[in-house]
Image 1: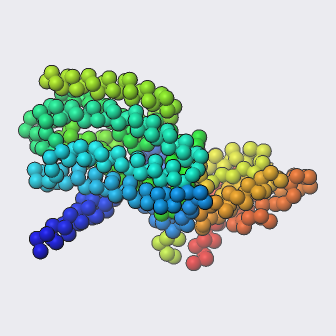
Image 2: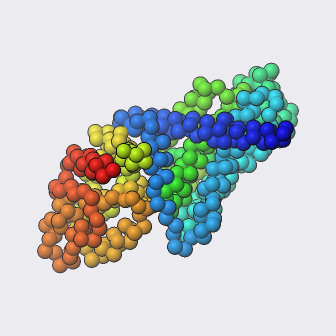
Length: 307
Length: 141
Ligand code: SF4
């Protein structure tokens, strides 16, 4: 009995609260805010509040087209694979914030890091299985971008771990910050979160790092062959990542989730996306490997010296 | 009216297909996205891939080269997908009616759902046509 009820509880937290439904709802609101603010920045009116939901419902009634020379199994299953990874990451991060002290396991920060990379990998697999040349162009860009941003992202994540002298559980990090002050109040923490915010922008695939999608250039790139409910799943994955990543950053750098911290990070993302043009892939790699990685290494050194 | 149909009318993603137009109609289509008209208010956005499209905006007089391509594009579109002919050229060949390499109008090849005449049509006319298309959709069910 005990076991069944604990499985039911896990399922509930994965599917409803704080997992899939809850995160998706917040993500839909966030992506509406994104579109609305973008529209206001461009002196437009912008879409109504239910627009992201209407898009998803509409996509779910469209036909699913499968390209003739696609590898069917991979093409169809990759979006679901990415969605479940994103939901699992979001569930871990929320649980660490909600049930302080009792959730997670030692090393779940590393697991969350892995889970947050999986949606991008799933998307690459799926769209390279579609057999479209533009999709493979998008995939090659996404791979390069991923190689570029993962290195500084992981280095910047080590800063809180060093400062807390080796805590690897997200809840422990939050508890540590409640006792000793948040990490962003130190120089090293500020440098690390700046690096992490840039990497978050690239992970979300937003302008200026949207060259894998590049609607005006390679017609949607990695999304090009997806239609109907599969496209809806991909969009949903992106919306969930738009919640999971900022909440993860607030948890490990900024003393845990709160609504205003999330909104601040969201506004930073949106303004960055609206004030920059798309960079070329070589510029992005140079930016992440030279500038961001050096900044992250400086942050780590400072953290080791105790700043 | 069902929820799904409502979602379809509230979120029309359009794909822009130029079949040899003089580029004037295309510029007027882009006008719709500018702050003055802003069709994103109604959930209409321009998409780059035909796989994401709910409506195909056809401009220009079809010529021998583009006829097989437009058929191909329409077959690739996920259904339900609407076709909107924009401009005098696409509606009834316009000044190219007797052209040697423009044998057929758009509606002899694709099932056109809405015609927007004009050379080029004003953005207001295009919005009026989309409103009519949505009304037609709602009337069906
Ligand atoms: S209808 Fe007029 S403006 Fe439009 S493509 Fe034809 S000639 Fe150009």
